[in-house]
Image (cartoon, rainbow, N blue to C red; front, side, top):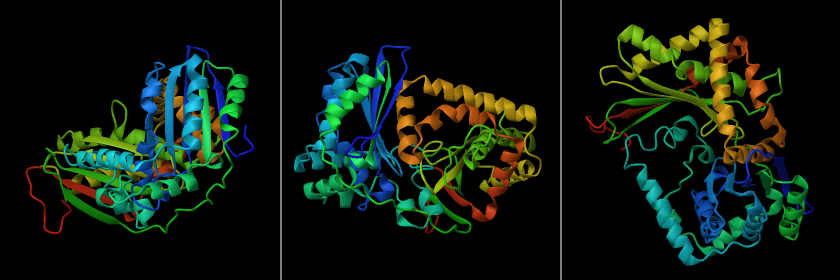
Length: 417
């Protein structure tokens, strides 16, 4: 349903437990924020007084800022849904933004930024990999922003950001759980329907021309072992349809075969050939699967022993990609990984907070929340040929490489600390 002011509403009835979740997605993330870090700071500011009211009805709430959206989500007993909708409508109508709140939340953001340097592999692979793979500032930025520039943010800056990006026509409200769709829609009309319409920002493309191979390194004084991260550009997301998976699905299966499950290809090959055990991870999407518009990235990371060079690890990665590009995986191997992915997916969807956020972001990004229900069927349709095509796309000449020098080494000359 779409209200007269442009607000889109998605409702899913799911009566297995007496709980419900509310998510509000706004169509602005850190790529479209203008001042670096403002989208994330504004996410913090929107919580002024909100936690206490949600906890007062026995619920919990949280939020996140991604490349192309910011989402706020709440889980409460089902009878408290209308209360939460009223709270969210109040935030959309007129959040309370004061100089004092800005200074307080800027300090919180500063601690988050500093926290990246206070733990091993902090900022690895995100946000350090993005500026290696991308050249455009909007794609390369880290989303946290620079604390020094955020210190100068004013209430006027925040009010302008709110007016441009937080109107109903740039938002999706999603409710899922033990609710009546009809009652929810009536409540949304009552609480959100009187919010004045404002034009939604014009769509912006963040596409940039593909770059050649790029690399960077930095010293992590807390890391016990070296590490590397590989990033590749991936095409514009397409949620696909049953029997016709988009490229993202083949890339996701490829990531799982290389680094996931009980016997991932990369770990097993390196163990056979070198006797070393290397910890790999891989995924399609900087944050999550089908979580952003173009461009996004395919990411692989490895933490390896000091006597096993990054070049040797990359040789193994390239050899496995060449093997899969030529022959694809075996049917049993692919089916085993698909079963693993499907089990993980269904377990994730059992958590109502995950489900309501997925529905909302699929409406916001793709205009089709129903595609969330088709994910399992579409993933099950991925073929060996889809995986082979994905492997052929991940060429060394399009790779971004980020390496980490561990605690035992000082920074090299010209290296990022």
